[in-house]
Image (cartoon, rainbow over all chains, first blue to last red; front, side):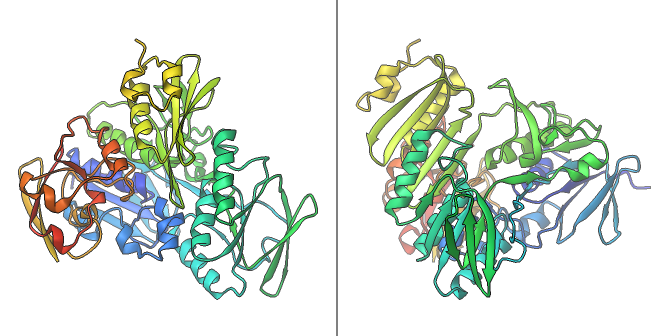
Length: 410
Length: 102
């Protein structure tokens, strides 16, 4: 009988793929099998709403790893396969075609899916898309090019919605963003940044409309009319839905793994079930630096948690202790975020010019996070100062003439 | 076409040939160890740090402001440092030698 162990990974995107390669690097001798329902060789997701959409790029230029690397590291990519259930007693997973795959270690990198709100008429509407994978983008491009008036309505003014709006605007679309809250990016950032991005989009000719709860979509032939609660209506050839995600927790919850705003994991990335780990967007995990449980939708978290899980599985005790970071590119604006600003009670704006500034978020004197606009220097120093738990001279910080190296008090 | 030589942290020398795209993409597509390119090449993660051979500094040219700032995230960065997602492949850089940062 063979004593070769098998590690099965459900989900082959940033978390799953980085995990597989990290596991091999850590010395795992057994099999590694990656499953994903997406048929495409795993690719970078962040460009999808940005340059991949705008530049009509090829997915070949955006692969996480070339196909040869999987062969070289003996990682089995099983694409276009839907995992339908886990049997934790038998230590097997079952695909929806009936295939059974056994495992010794199971890693859930199931991520999330786009949430489609129950708007009246949305099922019958023409050319309605979410944007989560390469196929979505291909469909959006096709519908956009086929449309007569190039009228796009984006429902939801979060990062995905705004990046998509920027990319389609650059392609020549007439774009309207409908945001339910009183400002765009309401869930993820502060009013200062919301105002900034509203101005940028408006300057580029995107219509940003807030307090617009969409109640109905009426469709006549290929033409949609998006109707809001206040009675206003917008014509749309193509509708993009960007109102958030639903975490893919079903496989885990069906076998009793603890779910809590995501698949709950300990600092070693282990779930409540022995031998089952979870990584990436699907996890609800403890962040040591912020002494808080969080669920993050980010490349950073996917990659870092993947490495932690791989090390632990290979017998190298490691705990997750990462400083979160994020980015968004819209037009020629580069937003870089380091840290988590939740719970801040004061902030400092360091203003260099209209399109180059940073916002520093504090709780008391403790620096929590920095949002930087076209200002990598602030991002970098913010990273260093958060890690060092440095106390900063806020007056100096607010003065863009002062050198960021000289703003530490202690 | 340009030939680019990478020297990895295990002192392995790999010479690759590319026509276009970024040096990071070329390295990732050929599995050069130590070049991760986690952000996909938009100068956001600093995981494609290389040291340019002194003889090639002029060929490669200078880093942009944002790249220079991002390099400060790497403790071991020095005057030869670049994030290779920001180096475009063209004949102008044919023959360059890059040492992959640890």
